[in-house]
Length: 244
Image 1 (tube, rainbow, N blue to C red):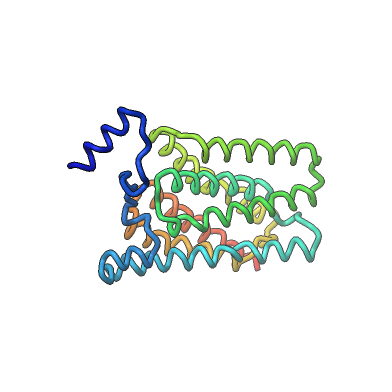
Image 2 (cartoon, helix red, strand yellow; image 1 turned 120 degrees about the vertical axis):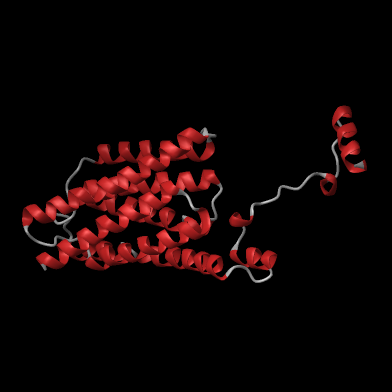
């Protein structure tokens, strides 16, 4: 009580208070690092801790998710078997998902792969555009527009309704993103250059994310996105295996 009165008096007089007297910002438990959350709980709920650990494993695994596709592009010097639309839409979808989670204050373990996959999709999109002979001016214009939109989302203060729309966009873009690749494979009656390893890991990753979402955030929009991602990647994997 005395400290509260002192703070009010100092504010009225325009006097700055020592840092140790200022109220501390308390983080929500779900936003704390894994070891901090476990310490607070005295060991923690086993399912919750497992979900957090799996989240970090997904993040680590996502660093090489698109590595087989990058390797194929580097060795074959061709992107004829890949749909550029798939990776540009995926780039936008993963970026929207990462921005949504960041603004909602979710733990980094729940969306770290969205950030890493967005970076990989950006690289693949750029390489595909170059190999397909798209004008450099168009590539630069698209890159500038993407960076500008990303900075606007991260540095701004979007209202809660816009955040919900953002995740709906992310889900929609990621849902639509695989359709061009599915159509390309179907029209050519071959598996194309999309790696079955990438599709298989995506199926596994989305199934794990369904578990971590149900355990940690219980966010229905995220849950819908991962369920749809699981279904589409499973379809793509089945198509690749069928045409192989």
